Each structure stands twice: as structure tokens, then as C-alpha cells.
Image (cartoon, rainbow over all chains, first blue to last red; front, top):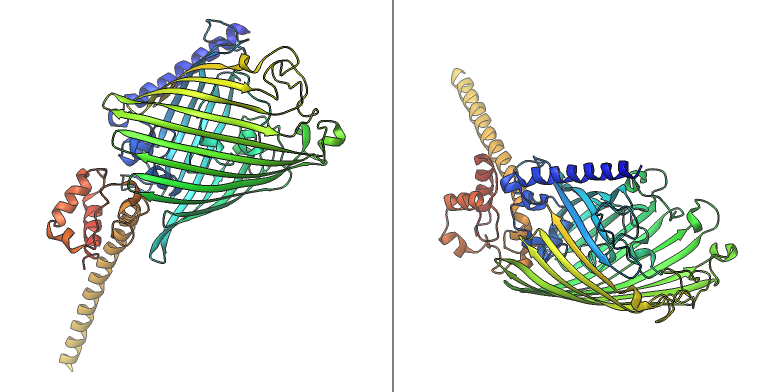
Length: 448
Length: 112
């Protein structure tokens, strides 16, 4: 059985490598599909992927359809591939040298992820960013982050107004600023390291669990507004958007999502200030009927970018406040309180030096989660639990990056926990300290 | 009477030619407008003033087709070459000669 799984994985990796090699062999098309479609360098849209430049934001908001071709569709289709291979060092992980180890405790993850993308124009003003991922740790295939959009524009008061419709499967995946969770820092983390227990619903909890339709508009590259409605992917019309994902967070009826941004540009500088949020009623414990818990998320974000010819600097921050009403979970004994509050704050500063040899740079980030103590939600359990019932965690991330040819990123990341699940020492009641979860993470992130 | 018929036929022929020419020109204008909005608008703007939604990303700014100075140093051939080969941050577009001609002619309507 074990040999069979390994064999499947080897075949799978060879298949992905085959696709990548075939993409590489296409000379001028030896690049991700956006570059192939637009004829522009990756650095026009990205400082360092996945962080977007002002042009990258415009490209995304205009539906991924800008193309150097005169055709209404792209031929060959805009297909790209991605491979992530990683090594994680955290207390408790097993030092196995077998890169095909399926265990959730394996330090080597090869691949951590392997993805195929349809990323670019579909037809005329309709485009998509759709990611099919093989999760090397979970050993599953899923439809990963997906954003299909139609966009158009016209003049309003002699200024451009771009409007569009987005169909996506992860609240904030459609966002064009790298402050919101789906494409916010850290862009990649270990798939096997222990992480804090408390997470807001906007912070990835609903990724691929829901599908949503949204409308948006941006006027004069300055004022952005969006309104979307999400429903659960467990059944009905949005079910394909959760393909491969086990639906464990079933949303009752529809969950509204909003987003507003003000941004300004001064030559090489840009600054944005925004707010976003969501209200969702979710059945507890993966149920799909009965009473629900209510989550109300309100968030603010800020981003500053300086994009010079050689020096690039950016700061991104977000604060998410979540009000949790446990109308369903309290009677079931899942929570100990009728309501709780949870706050997440993250800020990261990034610097890159761009040269003919590639981009070299680093990130410094601070993160903090605070909230009400709830001994039902955060109970003692080895490694993942909380002795105090507090969700509080905080720490910093230090990261060094080297990006070669704009497509191959090599990351050295160190996460230092000052507090983990409510305590500095013996946080889980089993003698584990916050610092035991400090994580050293090496990642090769290759785009083709 | 014969003269009246001949004149009538001549007027109808002339009218048909004028209408056909106008329609051809209109189709070309529409093609140029669509291509401009798809390929050029992001940077150069719908009004051709170099203030498209992505213009903020570039320094120097994209060309302003409404500026008479722009037209002093450029002609249709140079515009067509630039579309074909790219210039600075502008990519080389893979368009047919008819499409390039339509865009070039559309750009001329920004002349002031």
C-alpha cells in the first residue's frame, strides 16, 4: 500500500515536471502565462511575486485579459505551473530523509504543493486565475484559489471607471492589494508546522469552503468598492468551486462581503487605505442544518509601496476584528461563552534589491492574535491546545528571499513565537513552550 | 425624360458609393476604437491623454496623443512600427496589418 502511494506520487511529480519542461521548451513562452499573454516582464505586475505593483492591480481588476494578441482568445491557452518544495524544522517533526514521506510530521515536503493554472484571458473581456493543486502533505487534489472575472470600463466625469464581476472561491482572493489574507504576507508557510489555534473566518477559514459572486468598481484609480455574496460549496451551483475540498464550514444561506479602498500614487510611491468585512452564519461541527453561530468580521488595511529601478520597499498591515456569537455552539458545549471577540493584527516590511542577477531581499513581520478566553474553544491538548483557554499568540517572522529570473523564488523563513495559544510556557498543558514552535522553513517556489 | 433617369441612376450610384465608403470607414473606425480600448486604453486612456488607469505605474508617463507636440515627431509609419516592435514598457503587439492600420487611424482622431 505504502509502495503504491509512493509510486503514484512519483508518477505525479514526473507528470508535473513533464508539463513544466514542456512549458520551458516553448522558448518565448518559457514563462508563466500572464507574461506570455501580455508580452511584458513579470516585474511590470509584481515587485516580487505574488506582491502586485500598481500595474498588476490594474491588470487584475481589468479581468486578467490585457493581451498583446489581436485575437479575442488566447492560443495557446494561458496555462502555467508551480512547484513548491520545502523543508521545515520545528520541535517534534521527524527527521526523515524520505522526500516522499506522507506523514504530517515529515520535515521534507516534496512537493509541498504542485499546481497547474489557467491564468489569463478566456474570451474578450472574460478572464480567470484558476489553480488546480496537488497538496503533497494532504495527498489530495483540489481546486485551489480561483477567481473568474468579467471587466469593462467607461468614462465617468472624464475619469476612467473600471467595473467588473467576480466569481471566486475564497473571500479576499479577488483582492488586488497584498494586505488581505489570501495574498497577504507570509505568502507561503510550512504545511506541517504547528500554528496558533485561533483564526478569524476571513483569514483563510472559508477558503474553498464557499463560492461567491461580487461586483466591483474603481474610479480614477483612486476609489475602489466591492460587494459580494458567498454561499457554501457543499451543494448547489457553487459546488464545483469547492472541488476536492472537504466542506467543514457550512455557511447558512448567503454571507455578505464588502471592500472599500482609497489609494493614491505619487510617481514611484503608492499608498492605500482600506476596509473589508464579512458576516457569516455557520453551522457548528460541519453540520448543514440546525442552529448557527454568527461571525461578524470588520477589518482595516494599509499598504505603502516604493518601486524604484533597483530598490523596492513596501509595508503592508491589516487588523481584523471578529465578533463571534455562539448561539449554536454554546448549547452543544463547544464554546464556554455566549460570545467572544478575536483580533488579528499583522504588519510586514519588505525590501528588495533588483539586479541583473535577480532580486535579493527580505521581510520582517510582526503578528498578533488576541481575544476572549474561552475554555470550550481552546481546551488543553498536546501541541495544538491551550491550557489557559486564551487564543493569544504573537511573534515575528524574519525572511530572506532570492528571486532568479523573476520566476524562481528561494525562501529562508524563521518564525519566532513569543506567545502561543495563550501562554509563553507550558501553553498546551503538556509542557510545550511557545518557543518550541519556532519554525525554520526553507522553500523553493518555482513558477513555469 | 431620359436625362432625368440617367441623373437619377447617377445619384443612386453616387449615393451607394458614398454610403459604402462611409460604412467601410465606420467599420474601420469601430475596429480601431475596439482595439484601442482593448490594447491601449489601460495606459493611454480612453481620451488618449496618457492618463489611463495604469498610467500611474509608469515614469515617464505614457504618450499623450492629444498633445500637438506628440504629432510633430511622429507619423503613421512610426506608430505602426511602435505597435509592432514595442517601446520602453510597451510590449510588442502581435496584430495583423489591418488591425495596426485601424489603430493608427483611430489615434489620428485624438489630434487637436
